[in-house]
Length: 471
Ligand code: NAD
Image (tube, rainbow, N blue to C red; front, side):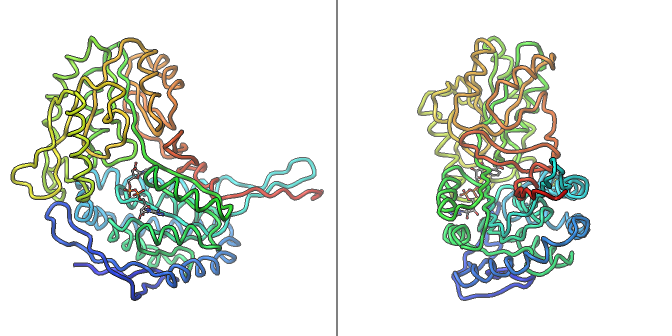
């Protein structure tokens, strides 16, 4: 079993006197890592290290910071398969998803951050004034467990490119990937103190946000915790970005593409066992196409073989934790109690698989008022909601407090784009188009505020200064 120290400060691991917790492999239910939680002195030490490194790092030319991040990219790329295997073990993410998304996205994202910092952000002349952008300062970054490397890199790439230094509190559920990332930082020669980690749970997160030397909070996680974090940050007048939950809708328009839509929507809902913030968990289908959609769902769901995530043939692994397993099963039960029709799947344990496995589950005849149509389940559960007119579909799509992602399926791209404009959400994919990582990513409403990715993500870590009378 891997043992991980409480903190990574100035590129060195510390072992403190705090309590330890054991991370469980969700496939075997065996312990896979033991991580020690940081205590207040270590959290203070990590923030002070980041504050001490800030003047030097922020003063570097943008090209020098880009060069350091390019070295980090090379180390991450070289170790990619190690990360993929670690995520299969610690959160049950299948190898195919690990390679394509869990590592594919951060590697692409980091490259875009490197390109952006060297090609944008020049000072601007406005009349006789100069507008310059300066890094905000020490960033407190808090991340969840479901895409642990991607969420860390989305913050690290942008914050470090901008000239900020940081302390990360990764999820206690996925400590191994976070520790592998810290080792990569050191081996890439990122200067001491620029990136630091403290391990822990809510208590460590709160201490980091409240620390007087953290100037900004970049949070990814649930809506409830995001609100709590923002409330603490407000006490210190800190800048905050929140990447929160979602309940995204995929709207099938009335002009064909049913087969392609169903296969892709199952992928967009079930990948990583539904534990993706942008999961298309609501499928809005014209009423007269519902029967056809059912038939296709039954056919395509058989592609989603459950099994050991470390097996190349597995499409769907377990959910990551016992809490998640119980939560998803409760939602499935709730769907049945509230009158939705179970088309396939269900909450029963899966024979022959001892871990936290949940079968890909599809409900139909779901109405917009039902709990499963309103709340984020974060599991492999799709709800089919019939609709009558496009107006009705847009109204259903916009009827939840979240707004993170969404999709439109249509042969008419112009019409699809017009409908996409009416959806109150941070991104919309037409006909399953992949997310373009150079564009802004973030939420409306309860899905949060602030943006990640591309130069938009870097901008969040910068602040403007106007210098008047330069000429
Ligand atoms: P979570 O909110 O429980 O935890 C997120 C992080 O916050 C963890 O590191 C946790 O230890 C820490 N934390 C918990 N309570 C805290 C507190 N009171 N103060 C400070 N820190 C605290 O979320 P999770 O279960 O780890 O992740 C799942 C959630 O994350 C889902 O809602 C999902 O939609 C969301 N998510 C959003 C995005 C996005 O980009 N919008 C991406 C991935 C996941």
